[in-house]
Length: 116
Image (cartoon, rainbow, N blue to C red; front, side, top):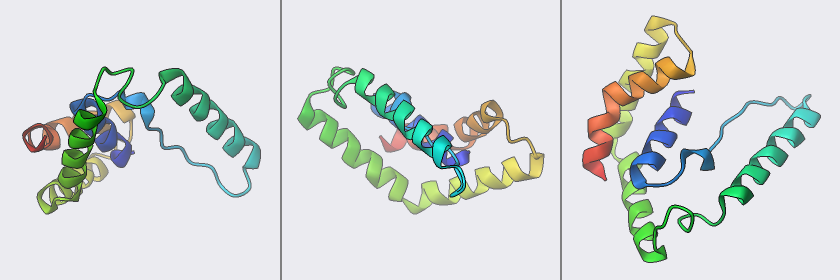
């Protein structure tokens, strides 16, 4: 859940729709659920259109933004801060997506914004 909140925050900061990412769980015994999840996600991404186009970002600008995002999430400082955020989430025992997104914003928001 924390990874999902982090990725959505980075996508949003880069100027892309966070709906372009989804992370769901399906066990090997849940083939129909897996098919449903993939089908729904594929339809949602098709509705959004080509990446960057709907958001009004030129291809060369998009590449630059994505390169910055990759460098940011590869940076040790962000990874350590993310580890600390996950410790906070585990300590609180609240795994609600809103709470997790709030912790990610509080602990990583400035680092993400300044890194992009």
